[in-house]
Length: 204
Image (cartoon, rainbow, N blue to C red; front, top):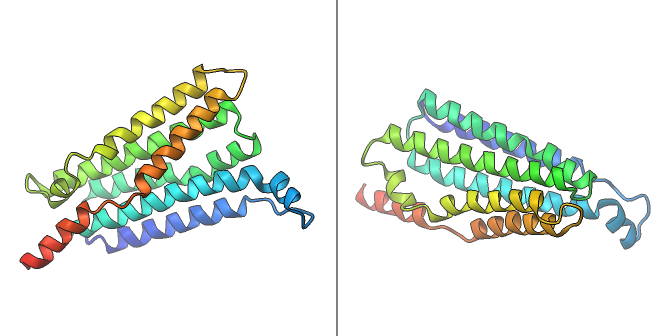
């Protein structure tokens, strides 16, 4: 089947995920800035981090499927696995918010990020196998250094939260820094797929 239905469904799910997360934010009872910080301070931080991650996945998903013409059953299921992992963001994000970045919720959030990264890599791999040895996606992603580094940062954050200063906040702070740093790394524009797309259009 063509990928248009898959992309439209994925876009809808990601839009719903963002909507659910923003609805979790608590509105202050009073108009003061201190009330905003006290009521929604943690919520705004967790929402911002998760929004950036959803935006990164949406952006990369969109670019990836510019190089895909047909979606097999394997691609459909791999895409659903990715959407399942991303659909857990509202839950893990809200848990971090309501517990003020407690250790276990931060670990679960890290596991959520790791699961989403593995699901995306699986989807990417299934597409490349479908396209064959001359896969345009394979040529576009190259060595995929960022894709390989990201799980390492997620694991480092998870282990830090579990091992470092369990009764304090140092481990959690290191974990959050790893998660935020990985997001910042992916925000930097990646032109690999754009270059391949332009090359294909020139050849056509």
